[in-house]
Amino acid sequence: MHMQGQTISNPTPAEPAAWRAWVAPVLFVAVWVVLYSQLQRATDAFMQLLPIAADTHLYGAVSFFVFEVPKVLLLLALIVFVVGVVQTFFSPEKTRAILAGRRQGVGNAMAASLGIVTPFCSCSAVPLFIGFLTAGVPLGVTFSFLVAAPMVNEVALALLLGMFGWKIAMLYLGLGLAVAFAAGLMIGHMNPVKLVEPWVFELPAVSHAEVRPDWAARFAQGWQHVREIVLKVAPYIIAGVGVGAWIHGYVPQDFMAHLMGKGAWWSVPLAVLIGVPMYSNAAGIIPIVQALLGKGAALGTTLAFMMAVTALSFPEFMILKKVMKPRLIALFAGVVTVGIIFVGYVFNLVM
Image 1 (cartoon, rainbow, N blue to C red):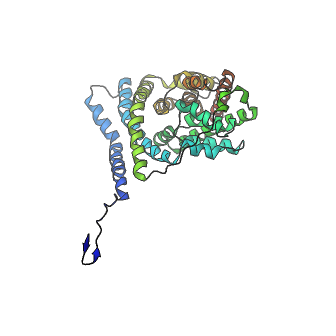
Image 2: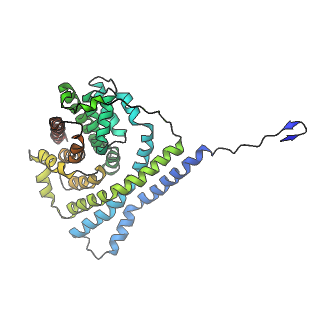
Image 3: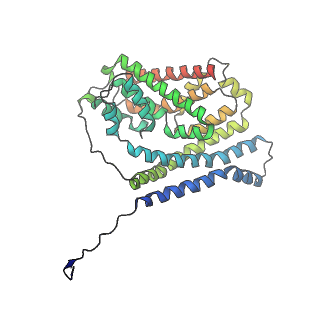
């Protein structure tokens, strides 16, 4: 358009301000803080409406359930959102690039640490295993990652922090990293490459272009994680809180202290043996852990039980049969089992 010798161009629509992407997350956190702060008051008011005497086992079990279900779900929703945003900074390609060619020791430590924050679980064990080996990641380093990813679950770590405090959360973190590091280092020294299915090494390495999303896209990923993961995990949490409520209300203090206490030498291996077939989402096992500790179970025994539930998974072993021979799966399971039992005994001695 021309006017008196001057050209006036039509203005282009302005891009949305970057701050708008932060409005929904800030409101979400504000509402979360209000709801979380009122949980105990709401639970007490609800329990007063029920015709249950306050000094009964049933009252203790029901009050535990009514308080813990919304508490864990609220913690889970916030944590999953934050983790979903954090995970947009990582990708399988970036993780493989970081670990490719790393030597034993340094590579194992890096792999175990990356296993905490990367969005992988048992269901992605096969593609991860293939992708790592074809990218040049050593076998032992790959195993450190495979152990740490499900065992040192970032959601479980944050839930432990919110429910038990930083000491137990850091113990869980340290134990998991130690087991993942030692397991990968031991398997790496053995180097049982012949026990990997040969076709794995025949596949070409595949790379994808790295995409850097903006904050709107990162927050969208966080909301997607909340919708998918919380709904998926909620039944496990309700079931876990139900078991925890029963333990809290009805299991005698002396019984659990005898079964999982420090005095019984067999308590740690028994806890691991019980935990293997009980594979569950890590978020669902934490209410049971809380109830066990409240009833006198030893900390090392309880953490060993939790690690066995999350790391020694029959479903994962069945999936790994596609890329590993049975002897390698047995070696993997055996090394991790010994590591979990060892750290259980150590922490029962020092705590």
